Image (cartoon, one colour):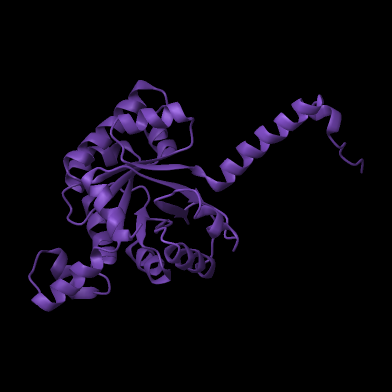
Length: 270
């Protein structure tokens, strides 16, 4: 999927699916390309990836037709431009709580390479020459700007945040949101689900993509999609590896009639 097509799907409410990629292995992209994903989510907020690794990953997934969306460590416009320079086709900014943060990110992502006073003038709504305007708009259509909504202050500011031009999506961070609500990791709690539904419905009313990164079972994820999400980041490569390896090893042991204790290797005595 082209980045412009992904952006169009977000705004029109069509559902798109991705996963979190942790591994920088050169063999990973060809495997990921067979999984039917619309995009990949690469996280530099919580995952240790250097710029060279990240750029290689972004360039490779782009070449395979899978847009890489990178979460930056903080809502820092300079970090956003660095990731775009490395090959990211979209930016996710974590823990955004104000219109000012979104406007600054808009300047970095959607008005690139314009900087300084010219960028500030454009953000203020001042007209620029038609040739420059066309150039910026054409490039902006190929890059995505998504912000994490994961706190009660962010929900309170959401109506205003959604009015910032060029915002392509909002993404719920479930763990942080549940903690901000005072119900840590209680993802079935009515208050958590109500907050999700509020975020999704407000985003869709503004024709902005509504997403969540979630790792629960199919029933839980289906419920979130039915509440209004149209962008699902399902689990992560490392979590899926762990889950399926555990299941398959358990099935093999059951098939031959042994338990884990029967085959476990004792720790060496030091």
